[in-house]
Image (cartoon, rainbow, N blue to C red; front, top):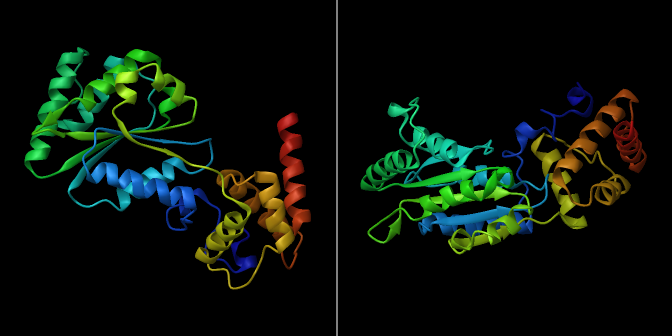
Length: 273
């Protein structure tokens, strides 16, 4: 709606642009490096955690996009609120789609199917990755224990796959209650909010990727974005996007702190109602 007014190719803060307009924040770059090392070294398990809105899923997606052909397949479990048996069947069906759709929920059957598929995968010189997104939603210790079983699958002293847990910090105390699994995590990465300087660079990066030819957010707007969003990328995206809409509606030449604060106040008011 507002793209033509601001002379942009697309909405700069749209979620669909996250990967194309990726901003290399310090903790994000560190997580990418460490997780790539874990996967390419064929470690059994790794952890990526952080508060909501900091870009955990994006980091995992970038890992897959930048992986080599030998790191394959990537299996994603995006809604992990499953029993231990259901989770393993879901994973088995993903690794062994030709046999999918069966009603056998026995753990040993699922583990055998997964093992057979992974052994065949390794024989082709490949290494699989299982990404469990929103892992804090995994129900009960039994489900975590079923994932731990998968980290035990090896051939020639190498793991057959890497289990990557992606979740909020509430996952951490649950992992501590399953020490056998927690000890298999070779890499643990914590995403932190953007600093003020990173917030400014983040907004510039998103705007530049959208084709902005001039400064649209002035310094007061950028300060307000950081102050109100505390470096949370998802909140920055939401406020900045709505501020661009307000600026378009009011035919403003640029976005100032006034627009950012007005949008923020409106969102707080709506939430309170």
